[in-house]
Image 1 (cartoon, helix red, strand yellow):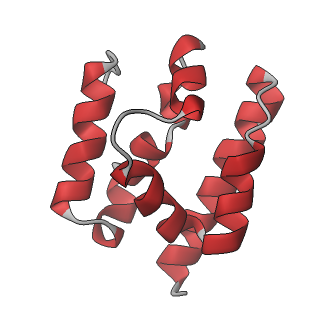
Image 2: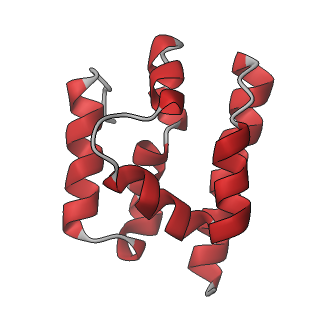
Image 3: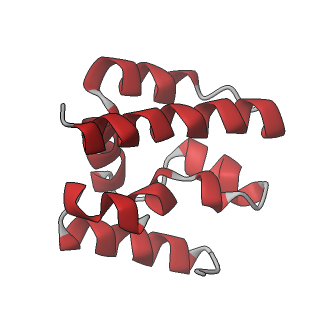
Length: 102
C-alpha cells in the first residue's frame, strides 16, 4: 500500500469510529471488510454494489452522509485512487439522497 492508500484506509477506519461515537452505530461488517481487504479495496466493493448498503441508509436517516464511503471517495485528496466511473457512482448515489456538496 502506498501512503495515499494508507491515508484512505485510515479515513475508512475514522468513518467507523465517528459513526459509532456520534450515531451509536456499530458497523461491524464494514470494519471487518476494511480490516480484511484494506480501505481502498473495501470501498471499491461497497460502491460497486447495486443499490445501497444498510450502513448508507443508517447514515442517510441520521443526516450524516458526510460519513459515507461515497463522500470519502469523492474527497479530492483521494481522486487518483478511484476511476471516473466509480466517482460518478458515488456522486449519483449521494445526489439521489439529497446530499449537499460543498
